[in-house]
Figure (cartoon, rainbow, N blue to C red):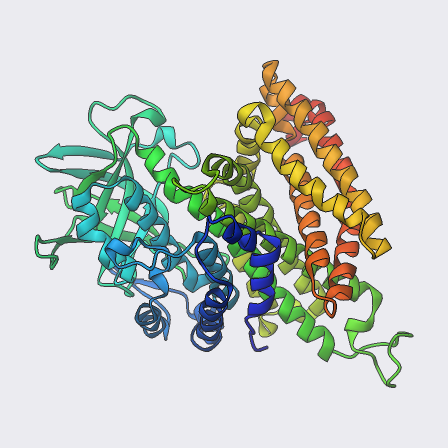
Amino acid sequence: MTYTAAVEEMLFALEEVAGLAEAREAGAIDLGEDDARAILTEAGRFAEDELAPLNEIGDREHSRRDGHDVITPQGWAEAYRAWVDAGWGSLTGEEAYGGQGLPMALQIVLTDIVNQANAGFSLNPLLTVGAVEALQAHASDALKATYLPKMIAGEWAGTMNLTEPQAGSDLGTLKTRAEPEGDHYRLFGQKIFISYGEHDLTENIIHLVLARLPDAPEGTRGISLFLVPKFLVAEDGSLGARNDVACVGVEDKLGIHASPTCTMAYGDKGEGAIGYLVGQPGRGLNAMFTMMNQARVSVGMQGAAVAERATQRAVAFAMDRKQGATPSWTAGGPAPIAYHPDVKRMLLSMRGLTRAARAICYACAVAIDRGRPGKPDAAFWKARADLLTPIAKAFASDIGVEVSSLGIQVHGGMGYVEETGAAQHFRDARIFTIYEGTNGIQAIDLVRRKIVMQDGAVLAAYLKELRGIAEAARGANDLSLGEAGKQLEGAIDAVASAAAALAAALAAGEVDKALAGATPFLRAIGLTAGGAYLVKAALKAQEGAAPSRAGLARFFVDGFVTSVPALAANAVGGADDILAATPDILAA
């Protein structure tokens, strides 16, 4: 099945649904629609020609360790060189260091396109973009001058080193230590699950590593952030000796086989890996969160992107595979299975969930751009981005798993074998719900921190925006959209009521009760926002496209948004059974 980058669909979602056009009119984003179209069209061509053909190769060959080196699959190095030569890594970098200074919103669409074509390839440039963002925000001028030009150009890659064997999501227990020595530090410790921690794509790899100084207190407040290069960099920018950092293992994983997931050892030779402090001592987690939050939106986008590829594959298969009879097929002979009602249901579900997840990720990226210092109403949009980030990450990555699973079902038995490629999407998507803080952690963040921001005013403003979409639908010429608008209003009411109840539980000190409902609450608000964006797309669509968009919006609201009141009720009232469960009951 040949991959096609549906650039016009993505541009429509960005401009009309996620609000880039509105941001442009407000003077918050200086990127013309024609320029965006030209850039994304070329990105689509690059993904179709250079990256998509390598997707199955990477899945089959894997990246492999050779001593302390890691060899990527056949064609990877050539594709990455083409990526660098085309300047794709420099979109959002600061112009002072060779970047193009373009919006995050454009970067997130590029992330969408690249992951549709080849999710295993995408993680290397994705992490480098995040590392660049962290260094731009927190590094000293000297570190910026030395490292950013090469990283923005893509000649050097970046990584994120958080997790340790004993410290998964609980970063307060990490043990990697950094000992001061003159103008630098020497790091000792081990990190696990480091994506692209070692590879043969770039001449240098710049690791951002969380570690503790000798006098650091316990817990997260004692963590600092360090820049640790694979090869030391001389004053003239040339590469020197190899640092005391090495890949000592590569995981054998369920999916994204071409992306090496490494165990990294710092100071194994006894010298200590030379590193440089980024930001303030003890404020490393704050600096790292700049990278993590960018990565969370990108990982959510990865889920939606793989969902898009799985949907394209399922639609193509369903149109080609002929089996059985159905009244809607009148051409004689067996019908393409796409004409069978249950297969239609699955394909509509895949298309609707994918577009809903995409719109949420795009809207979050636009909010990030509008929330940057100096932009009109920056504080409002910064808060909006903070609210949407856990929703974008968790909802969209969940959708990647669900849609790719449906894709296997559409293929039937052929989906369960590797020949069709449908299984790869499911295997690849499964990690995204775990990356950058599991989706349960995202739900906890949403309930414990985000819905109570400014005493609930941030959430209230967002729900007001969604309510405006519902009200517009109720006034639309298409009466069926009016009914969808009514159902959407009911969902918004349910989300608002649940949020108030969860906030009250937190205020009363019933933290566990509130957190027991966090995951169904996140699902409820994700479906509500996704439904609203599909309705908005139907309202914004040109006349010729309106019937299909309206039909998809109605299907999504009827099939998914109507479940929101039940999810909201479970978020509030389902805690008692969860909290009553004890290990002996769970083991019974």
